[in-house]
Length: 526
Image (cartoon, rainbow, N blue to C red; front, side):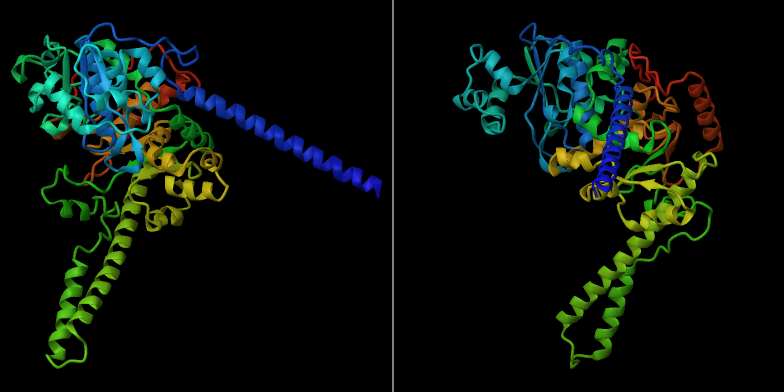
């Protein structure tokens, strides 16, 4: 009996040792992956010193009213304008932001603040009040706010009144807001807010990769020549929060650094399609809802109209003395319409999946085992159906979270570490980073979400990062590798991408990133 117990104990010990070794190896690999993911200068050194305000010149901004990447571009362009005009950038506190309703969020919530503070002079509104309380007639409510804890809300009415009396509005027109000369005025405190009409977000070339696109002395005065320091500022000092890199690192490690195909497939916004009729473009054989080979496009009738017509015929046939009341008919009509809508949406999702699959097949290089990560606003199971039937391994954020909640997959430990609200609000930036470190990335037309992925791929020196889309107004002169809702895959783009891939492999960029690179962005893309 003692001999048997000893064998069992030895086996358990060996199993525990093997499990421990496996975990140690996984930790080492994860560390190497996350190290490769940090592209900025000084990533291996100690935190650089904070750049403190050197004068009493300030630029305040409000968050943009669009999605997170519009908000991000707004504070990036504000930072560039502040440095160029020798001002300290002052950012607002966290608040409920558009499409980010899990919890209040903002500048500090999303950014690596150590990098921000080491790149330029940046302070919060609280810090501004504390710093300038003896130089401005501060209302008592603002002074109390400055001395309060982090969760206290900014007294908005008092702040707006103070701002109106002691600051100068940058302007209500984009021509003025994006004129770099506007910020070089002698006025000590400037503020810019999208609520006034002018959006500093628009000073970035949003259809491309969000590079600075200021002008000087009005539109007729010519383009502001973007200096190298502004590129370095954005690359080295405006990166997502370390939490984003930590969570994304687990997924990137699972999929394989620069080994998987990544795609951003956006379906919720068709306002910028080149086709005059979005519905026609969507239903075209090569459109988003076509199947990619000219066969089986979704039927373009309206099921709700059909259901309504049927219900009306039933009511008419029964006559005024029928047994069913009009309210029951209305209820039935709504239920049938809802069912028809669900069926139509399911069919549309399947067709979307077929279209995405037809594009992705090109980049698999006959390797059906290569993982595919898709960041998409279509989270239905029908979307994945074509991939499953073709035998491909597709990963989405939705399924990763579901696995993690069950204690499985790369997010299991992250769900234990971070709150549900935190992960929900950070999911967009996390998915952007996952796409950044794919072997091939295919993005969506005129998307700031896609644009920042492309920019981060340049920063990370990922393969195919240089296939930029270029715009003159709303029309592209070079479509790069973005998917257009009504375009077929371009063989010339395929050849360009594969050539870049081969060159990348020769340089061994898988393991090495040049952190001294300034991250120059296009200067002539628009």
